[in-house]
Image (tube, rainbow, N blue to C red):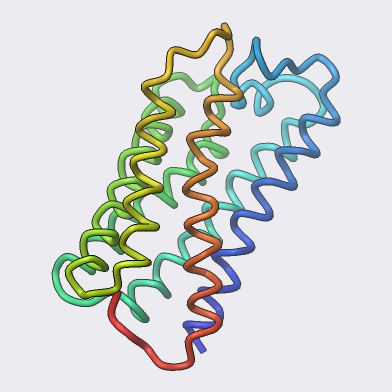
Length: 192
């Protein structure tokens, strides 16, 4: 049961994030993908509540996904470390909505914690999968991390960071959906 709930929550976390982001952007004609950061949607215009609520809900669903993933697929100390890392990253995602950009340090800390811990979790899960002879899941996880790092190293030509921010999150989103589907489809627990 936990496995199915976690799978649904993993997929839902990404859908809620995407839908609320697109709705906030469509309700903010002033927003520029090349001149603004995504977090400005949480402090300016009529979409403030929608955007911040989307971050909070995405984080809550992601937290449930992390717990279920940890209990269903991750074993040993490295598995528990991965789950804790994903839980901390998910909590930080919610914290970005609770502490919008205008709060300064709390928002910036939540953003850094999100990036560090979510991507650390994906990396650790990738290593675990490779060592457990589940190379497809390992390669998927490690590829997601390397794509994220590559996106962060690109010298983007825009003054705003909305497009790069979206690109940083895309591999995580696809990874979460893939593992959410895996939790729903596989009837028996297997170690990553």
